[in-house]
Length: 186
Image 1 (cartoon, rainbow, N blue to C red):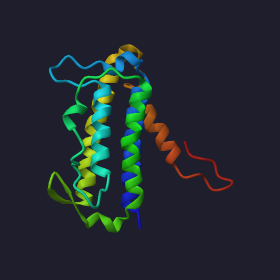
Image 2 (cartoon, rainbow, N blue to C red):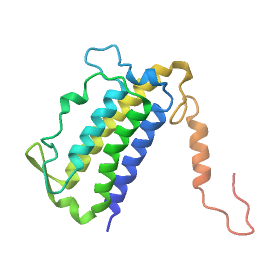
Image 3 (tube, helix red, strand yellow):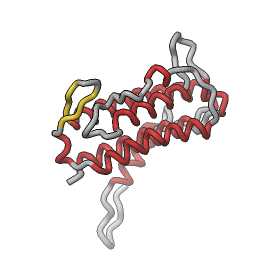
Image 4 (cartoon, one colour):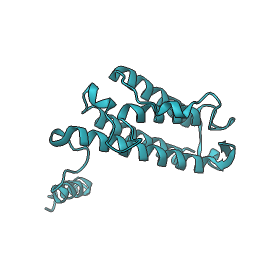
């Protein structure tokens, strides 16, 4: 059975797509722009870090420590100027490792033990940890992208001032279809 694992896959896919929608709004120069704060990251740096984290954590997920000796985490945070193609190749590499690993798991694996930085944890805890970490960085990517775009930003969710319209539309789409011969109540 894969109910929980399938749900985890779906949520990771949603956040991957959210970051990609945000990044697609940037021009290549904006990918390397960091916020004004000290030690802040650019979208490109965050992509390098997310990819490095996913690749390390999910390579040989069930059989080796999630912090691989070949990972050089600090190098992921070096400011970089890269092409969109280079950045997206790096991005896809990390996500590919994650999704290939998730495809091998079943809900029965959730109680198994893995290690991250020599600390044991259950698979379910490792997945929660990874998901929270990725969501944190996706939020940063969205904020950097929105800030860079300013007034030209294309909203990725319900636009401000349109919540009631959105909710009414969602409710009407969720309403059961009327029985044949009956009109839908409005």
